[in-house]
Length: 108
Image (cartoon, rainbow, N blue to C red; front, side, top):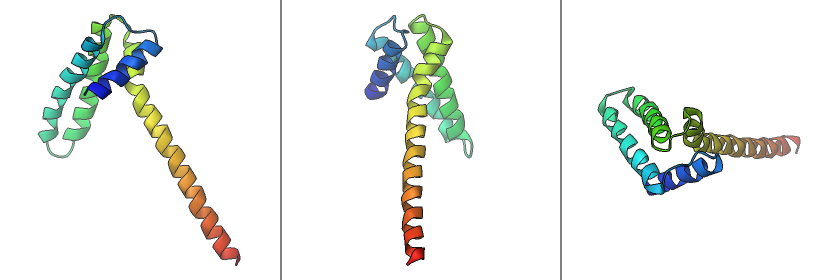
């Protein structure tokens, strides 16, 4: 939770949306974890909990730091976007490597 709060806090600083302290950011992240209770619902519980957690963080950060919802949304969603882009990049490198191996084996 502290690492998640620290990452979010740094992103808020980068986007100019920091008006509170680190404690407030970690508190919002901690309170948003209440959405994990929904995971007990079979099938769609995890998806609903994930979306609810993101919504709680955006609302909480915008209220605690007195910033616009869009700055809070960018701070919350940026790590997910960066991780997804990194995964797509790694998959592309892996796929290219496999295709190069298969291509070189077929010409022999």
